[in-house]
Amino acid sequence: MGPPPTTIGILSIGDMGLSIANLLGLHDSEATHARARTASLELLSSDQELAHQSDFLLSIVPPRDAWSTAQRVVSGAITRNPRKPLYYLDLNAISPRSAVAVGDILQSAPSIHFIDGGIIGHPPKPKLKAEDGWNKPSIVVSGPHRLSDAGSSGSHLAEVLNVKHIAPTIGPGSGLKMCFASMNKGLTAIAIQAYTSAYQMGISDELRQHLAEYTPELYKVAEKSLVAMPPKAYRWVREMEEIADTLHDEGGFERDMFQAVSEVYRLIADDTELGNEKTDSRVKGKTVEDVARLIGSGLEKRKRKTD
Image 1 (cartoon, rainbow, N blue to C red):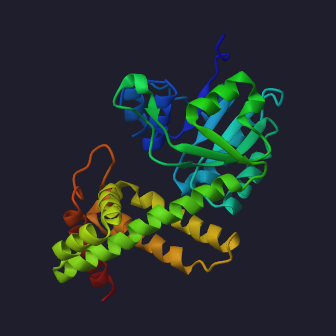
Image 2: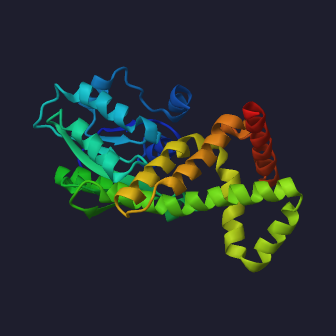
């Protein structure tokens, strides 16, 4: 006998949220209302309705919205029966300190069981052969509440989503996400500066040739990440600030390195045409040459503003 029927709420239906909804079997097809209509998801009319109907709620929003989202859910859940817990999984790219702050907000609603976490990896998608299942990211979580506390439905959800509970306190789940993201998104920021500077000097081909010859794995990662980055840059501005806080609070390092990385992504999001890109409708920045060219133009535009 399978797990009892459960209702899973997702805030919000961006690229990752939509893919996770796919994985959960909520739909079988491919921007909020448009995406939801295409995906056959049900859009609820109020936060209270969402908080009362859901058994599990996944918060997957831009990092800047993590706190306001938690406050919205609290406002909706304040009248929920505390004997019917709502498991709130904060899967946003925020620091352990911020995760604690989200937990403090959620304490106002006795029915909410807070789980701190983060998503490591790409959005889930089916493997080439349907019978082989799905490629899934790792969802790392921590805190005093476990999905298995919700019985078979929670255990089943943990299995489907590839959830790993790594610690009994709030912070390690989001902290692991931050440490992982500092590596790959930090490397992307280095590639942005190197490729753009090489383009400005007219030596792009030579840079790429030497990377391919002497560090082929790094070359592949850099080329792929540069093209994939533009639609995500606006989200990464705040995420880099959260990484700076994590490495400062937990590791003892200065914040300046990742604050500078944040400014790299702010440049792309605010001062280049790449900031208008959407994951599911790419127009510009589909090659590394175009990415470097448009970032160079953005730098010139910013310089003219300050001159």
